[in-house]
Image 1 (cartoon, rainbow over the protein chains, first blue to last red):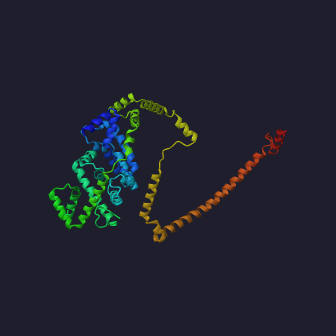
Image 2: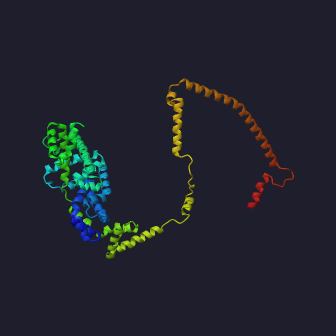
Image 3: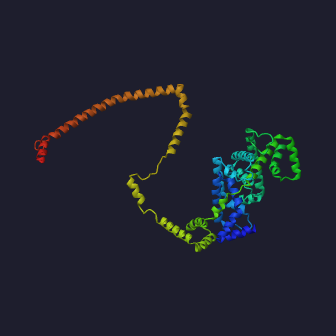
Length: 196
Length: 247
């Protein structure tokens, strides 16, 4: 964390090498965030570029001791929300894009790949049925991998509120997924969601 | 809240493994005997598995390069902000520091400020709008007293009042009730009275018009003939004058 803060400090002085180091250090998390919200793999890349531009333009607002991912989400919140709305409107998600799925570990195994794709498709359909705000909470926590603390800071909400809302969001999503599972029953022994 | 509702509230934390051991035991015991809650648990595990799978995704290799390869492209956004005087002092200081060392961005800055100045100077001269309006011949916009909305609202109001006072016009027309008969006969009588009364007056008016027309024709004939000492050429002489003019 100290390293990141030093890097940010150097970026503020216009140090291009520091900027490259900051991008390399945070790319994995920022890309996951973008891939969680964008409607396609190509748009996830574009979104990542826009998010980094926002980060770069607002570097002065970053305060030492803040959580970088929480701050990044706050800075790029509108971009991410717009991308998420586009995805809901188009009924699409970057994480259903074969280009993204191929980069996941274990993508060589066709059986595993099919199972994963079906699982993601069920969740995508469920997410489209719940409220937008609740869907975003699930994406932030379960897909982008933000911690509760990061979410609380990023959303500017108390930790308890984040937890209770996320609880509600997950239960509503589970109900929507259950409904889908009843429409397309899962074969016995594949509780993880494999659908033929 | 029944037992299943209580357990359902604990299920997300149970799936994440964040429950206290005592609550974990309670939930596990309930799940063994409740199929509905087991289904919810399975759905929650499916969601968790889907998300966890995606968390392992790696960004495309070229993406970092794309973001870091063209440093000056990033400064362009700040240049625009500086031209619009929309930058915080610290950000402006960062930009100025870069401009000192980067000739390309300095040129971009010069171009942007020039464009900004030109754009500011591009204001329509006074009176142009008025002249353009006159060229097109369009009348100057006048304030409307009754707009489309007012007219529509009035029409609706009239329709509602008619329906309230007389009943539904369509129903009344279909089933000719006493009111309609009564109204029809009153209208018919009134029209025939008015017609009879106006017929005589109309004849009188026509006779007077004919008389007046005759008188006017007499006057006109006298004027055309003219008095004996009048020097104005007679209508028959006009063609001769015309012929002389042509010669």
